[in-house]
Image 1 (cartoon, rainbow, N blue to C red):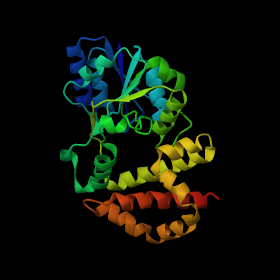
Image 2 (cartoon, one colour):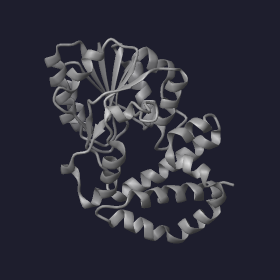
Image 3 (cartoon, rainbow, N blue to C red):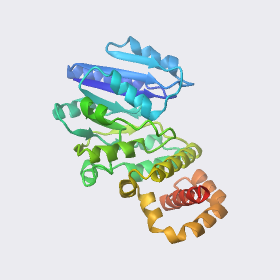
Image 4 (spheres, helix red, strand yellow):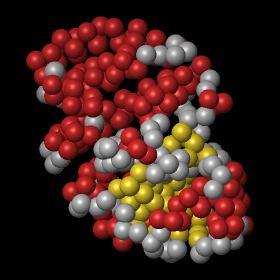
Length: 297
């Protein structure tokens, strides 16, 4: 029936796995929970203790293989015909597993969505929380209006046969846009995505400094994907910052100049403000993309 797949990197997921195990047991379905640790520096011993639970399998890798490869490995090792991908920094709601069961069996990809808990807000994490709350929290009704654009593997139920025929692109070695490319491939293969209201809480909120660093890495990944020229129109349709980049082509040089001039001020604002403007954050991303593109010419 169900293989729950959780890639782990430097996060204590004991509470998540125990809650999932309890819900699966109550649901009385054939299940397994597969955990692979991607050569973490922290919490490996704590997470390894989860292997004492029935139907839980834990593997620790001796070298880091990256976000795409570890998810592909989890799917290859999965026992059952339906795969439920969950990020290790998630928190589950009551009846989370039970809400997925009416959709099985199915040839659709089911995405449950995500939420942010105000209890997890701190001033040091204000940018990530603000972005998640305002941009990532969306109802199923809203997500179903553009199902491929709203796709994320953070909370995804997918038939194993469909996933193994497509898989994550392991050529993406930097952080960011693994989901974007998988969503493009699912759309290309005409695989139906259905969004439902069965969210996970995103608990592992980075502080503002780390989130900015990850944003930079994500933009570099986007730049490299765009320069590969395999899916230029699909990328532009799915990623608003890239769409805006293309629309502002005559302004790229002045945008880069302005961004370079005021970048320290913007970064200080985004890092220290308790409720930073996402419009300022959007300009930061556009400026970083324009500058990165100019530097590679």
